Length: 105
Image 1 (tube, rainbow, N blue to C red):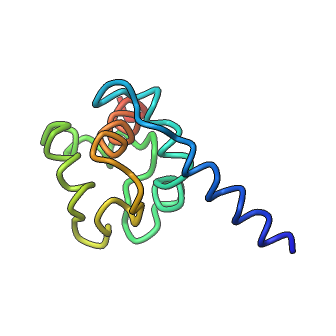
Image 2: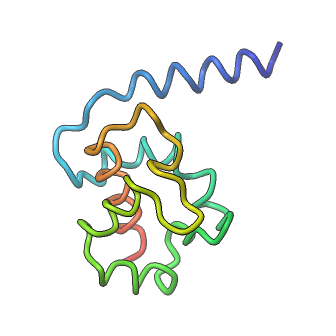
């Protein structure tokens, strides 16, 4: 029962994000990160660069936010498209990327 309730809360949270006000908005991206990206980027699962690891992010950041957002939307290496978030808009993904970049600087 606890698992069902937890899953329902997670799904409700995902549906209530809404659309962020500006592409590349790091503050709005924190919510997306916490609900979607954190699963891999907190632990480094499957080679994902960890949040806040400047060394792991530096070469990625050099490619630019637009290229990183493209990779996050379309998938790259072991990362699936949109990090498996089927309800995330391009703007949500751009915001999550901006958030992760802001933590790596």
